[in-house]
Length: 152
Image 1 (cartoon, one colour):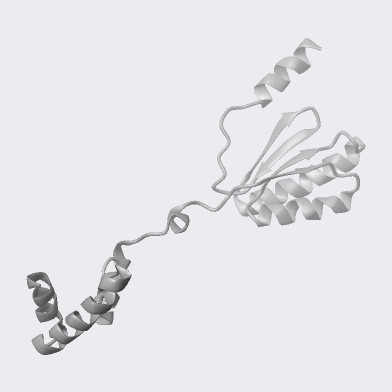
Image 2 (tube, helix red, strand yellow; image 1 turned 90 degrees about the vertical axis):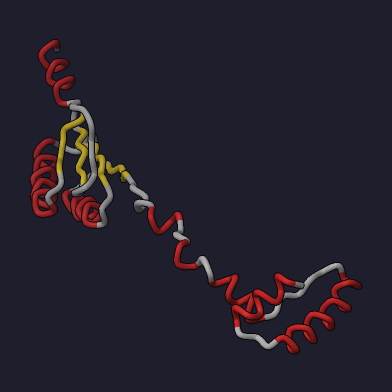
């Protein structure tokens, strides 16, 4: 009962109303094995720590995606650029295109990447990786490709 008096004095609830509520709640709670808390106290307890709660999702980074493309015509370059503008990395495989068309697309994508302050790297024979800004790649596959070209 002393704890209830401390809580009621903290919230400015008069003693008589607390005792009336407590006795009426006690009689109903004893039959149900539950204790009801006055709404003012429940609201305070529910909202007490709300300012300290941080959602895990709000602090996490947005999910990164890598899109794979095998363009066949020059107009496919627009889709690649749209993905870069949407902060998605793109791996482009030019093995199904002639070299002149592939070179034109690489030039277009290089311009897009430059405008975004991203990067483009050759990662294989006719395979390129284009990344938007704030997308990190670690290591250089280009050195391995050049060594392979020298051995052939």
